[in-house]
Image (cartoon, rainbow, N blue to C red; front, side):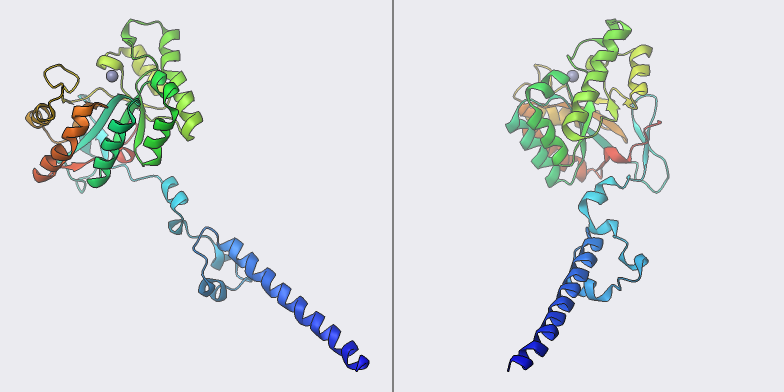
Length: 281
Ligand SMILES: [Zn+2]
């Protein structure tokens, strides 16, 4: 009996080692396959001896997918309207923008939900002082897949300011947004649409596309206060192909949004994905 066990033990050990090695190989294979969805099937079908076969597929990873730059379909013209770069892109489109946030979670969440419902992307032009007060709301905009734009730190009239002040008003927002979401804004809109050559140059130096708007909803005006129907009417009256629509993070704008986007869709309009805008417009 003793002799039998003595014979068996090395065999068992060998079997166990072989098992460990197999296990190890499977793990290695799985590691190489990350971030592809690792199923037993892929593990088995991928020979470890062939490095080409285990190249991770970017389309299998949502994280990598976001990093793939979107095709540039639109460029902005001198009056801040968007035109297709190639004829294949539809010209009946609008850019949706929401300024002066982030500051009201209820309003912001409502806007984000409505955008999702219509599969629409927008730019949220934020002010630095509000980002400082509500960093979690800034993160929310990014997490929900929407673009963050720079609207200066204090919402002051930059045209009246010195070079040093303009640089700080713009640069500090870039810095803080980058620290919170790991990317800097690519779009700049000056408060009150007021910006001269100095402001334009500073925005450009920070890698941003400078824009005002071409369709003001007047949602900020007292004539629209608590009146979603006025916001809708104002936008539709000024509607044109490539419209750059200015709205704000306001309760009545959030209340108007679903109906407004539906009306735009019914007129055959689509929504420009900010990622598809050429930044050298
Ligand atoms: Zn503003």
